[in-house]
Image: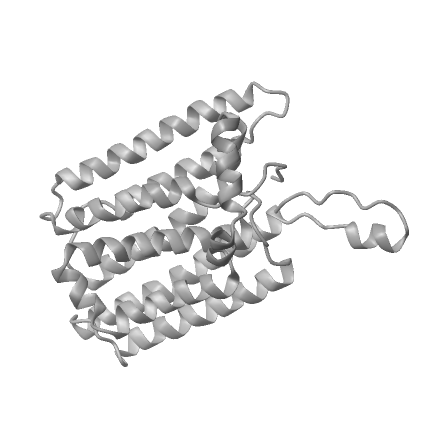
Length: 291
């Protein structure tokens, strides 16, 4: 799963999420089961992304280095899950909202990240495209956006702001706010999954020990938020108590499943760094295989 390609976190994912964040609001406001124009546009974007990825993966597969079919499968699964998250709402219930949140912010990003789309981009794009991208992803803003403290704040703080402030109600009344929230959860979820276990290298990736600690803090944060929602404490969501309990249960158990999968991905993509050992023995250090 290692790759020698230089970092690029989510230029494509961020741009796509910005567009999808707009159309998802229309999809959620559609009548149950109806395919709105916004939902149709979202599905078209996802199909286009799948087609581009498949063409690029086929091109890489013909090269001596090849391309891992598991990456292709993971990326396609991520797109399918994202499609379910962007579907027209089955109902206006809080549990249905929570399912969409879990797919959009946790499960779909993990599948997409493990597909290593940025590695594929750098291997297939022209130098005129990759050079500015590499420069951008080595920049200070990219380092800030992928810092563990920033991502923890974005992921857990986003949940707190949505469910324990009037933001949830405001989003129901304002399409732009609704779209921004969806974009936030997808982008922050993608970056967090990449920081923990993404095969694509990136700026200042923390050590494996630090990533485990960060993941543990995220697990604790999700559990606390889920339990508060279940108990109806401090929750600023206008939903019946039984729906809050169901939503809290979904976040608690399915959030744990997503985080277990993320931890497993970390173990599968981790490669030991022998540079310290080599240097201590007075021999040239070998180049570490990224993430």
